Image (cartoon, rainbow, N blue to C red):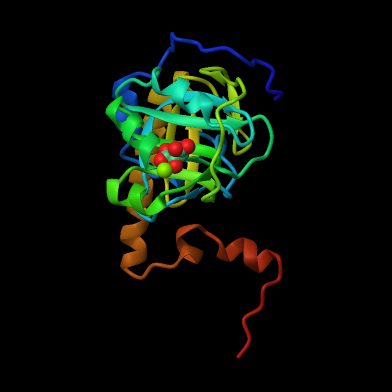
Length: 229
Ligand SMILES: O=C([O-])CC(=O)C(=O)O
Ligand SMILES: [Mg+2]
């Protein structure tokens, strides 16, 4: 997707249903990604800026220009309780767009985390604040406020399409985007998947092998797998 909308701030966002967001917050990124049909994952170069980072919320999207964090300040005004800010950039840039000052501002507006296809700084402070951030880099290099981008337009962040109001879940495994219309359905599918895994876990704990649980012996024999002394 091309980033074509520059100089726009959409002030009305159709956010995912809060109950579905609360449901999704119970599940890990791997579970949600699988339950969705193996789609929606951002690229794995987006990493937590500190180990405990985890978040679930509705997206306020930002389109940044490289080396310029002006639109993050514009976005702050659009944040509502429970939002995650998702910041993409018109072209690759790993400067330190965001730090503890912006985190303080975002949190005061109700923001529960940031995903940014760019760099962040002040990561020790972010950890002390327990403000979850996922970024492509940690970089002390600062940014300017000189060029227009956009807020609350569809963006591509970490190779995934994010529309304002979509659900973002991020944990140590990565970042997944759940389209806002699918939030309740994906939460239900995640619950079913988790129940299924609990069944398998119980059997593994009891010593059962995947070979038997998944009926793998027949296909392996058909392919000619031999057991030798
Ligand atoms: O001020 C900035 O441009 C980024 C930063 O370090 C902060 O938000 O603390
Ligand atoms: Mg700072």
